[in-house]
Image (cartoon, rainbow, N blue to C red):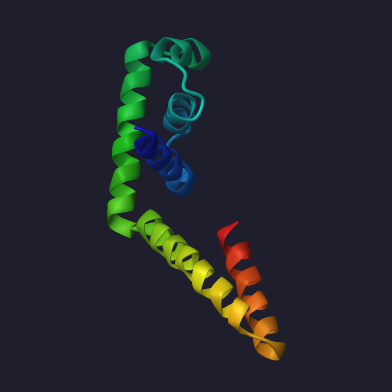
Length: 116
């Protein structure tokens, strides 16, 4: 469930600007603010059915864009690759001295910056 919520949030972050304003608003309030359909309907000034329709259309559009572009999949692959470099770099740092030590620290800092 938590993984699904994270994916929904990432979809909105990556592709949200491609939605209509109303779809983006309803989807954001539902996913990120965890508001009920009634709460969103009251805030947006539309019916609960309108909220539901906007959320479903937004979800379909966002997933379709991810399927076509794969940006989130690639983002996760790159992040995983960078995270897998941390342990070997720490080990290399422990074994290194002189300029090699400086280089391993520089690489660790670069990896940390890319991940944060």
